[in-house]
Image (cartoon, rainbow, N blue to C red):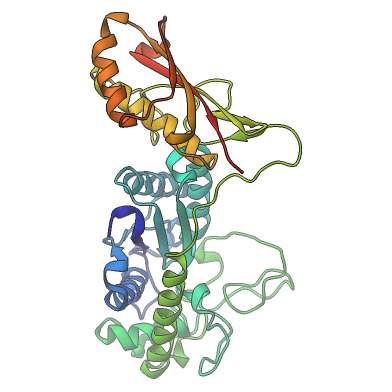
Length: 374
């Protein structure tokens, strides 16, 4: 199975205080075990990455025993890790989350990737939080309404998975603020559309929340089975999700967002069944930086970028009817021509080659016209 067909799982955990009774590795421990169980069941369908143990946990710093990345830095870390996976050919990526503080910066990372990374728009990249996927909140045998932090749920899971890391003799229900009728403090009220963010020291007297005194290993076994089962079910479905293409627009031209534009232009525009691909160069589709290389290397990377735009519009390189090639040095013609011929494999579109002054130190730029069949 090639990289593009496998589902990559990147577990996202945290190293942070979990009240007086749980280990600082709780979030990482649980999400890693859930991911490993899914990998064991699904085999070669998935590839499991080592967990990103450090999360966005600045709100726990006042209690100590916490190693945290700021939300902005955590967002960038996720962007870079996903970019690495994309660069290596993976197109189905699951960011499996085990810490509530990671959710907002990971969502931001997905937005940044979609805006800045051409390969991400060709891939399926999702955030899945294991307890939301499992949908076990408030259901028997659990006695409290939801998973929060060092609560009945996490404590039960750790009693099942890592009992040596649980100190039930130190469990104490934390003090918390009085209800204001709108914002629940962790898990004690349903969400009503109002959000306030406070450090843990403002909403918990000992760093925990929920009802950890109600935890049992039997409840943990139940939660673990539900979490693994839900993840396996999702991964099987996710492996079959199609890669979406831009939908035809009712009126006017369709603008293609693939590629990495470096100026005020669309990567491609479809009108009346014709795709006009803007000039592409030897640009890294992840970083947007110019890749310096030989004329052969730059020609092949440029053509790959042309291919990405065409495939994003629903076509293939066989649909190209005309290319215009701009060389910064016409003396490179013979070498570029050999690389160009190897890319098309003997079935060539019409072509014009000219010498031009190119920006950014590019050796070659190629624009194209393709017929897109509806």
